[in-house]
Length: 326
Image 1 (cartoon, rainbow, N blue to C red):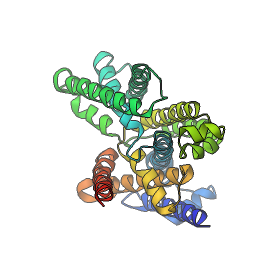
Image 2: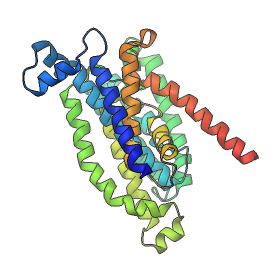
Image 3: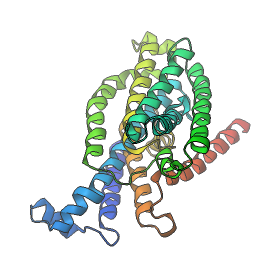
């Protein structure tokens, strides 16, 4: 009962935040305008805002947040690391390095989202090969991922500081993640990824619940821990790569969303649906801030998630230390 109530509240919160995003500001589209659009009687201005400006941006925010939330929940479940996320294994840093390299080597020829996906794929492939066990060992995956992240970050810093002085300001927006100038093609990309990958995640959900019991018990119950872990990390990587391709490497959503979902549900388990909804709500609220809030206006949305996520990570670390000392 509690879980259903929480999901309903999260859906309602997303709806309220979405309506505020559409209605706020000089170009706002109010409820009456939305009703006219639903009846096919919308004005040209309303259609322009919904189809070109705020509508695609809002849908991308929801899709990206959901993808990051599910990816973070998958990763934390199978690694049994509450501070884990796809970023830990180098996906975000690899995406940034990919964008930097394609901007350097093929300026104007290769779109930044393509460079991001190529960089993220290369980073994950390097982690997979470097562990010697693929994704079978969570400890090796995390340690290797930290090393790959450091190398990718160093490459990005070199390209920005030395080779791309003139283009560095534009590249900086990509590197922190942004929802500016999103269009229907970005909505289609993240929607297609969710439609294809979420059913596979749902098929894996039963085995994921067994992973909380440890590898030996999971194997005894038929979950096949190594296979489940590898599939879950692969799905997390694909969801994150899809999100990165339309928004850039937005930080901390994949880390924080599963934690918040667990806290509001107050129950064990991966909580994939709740993590998706929390991630979507985080992205919509962050985007609302950067669209309407004075000093934050027009900032890349990744700046907000990084700031809030950094504070939340500090809280988690302090809470963990206090529990360890108690």
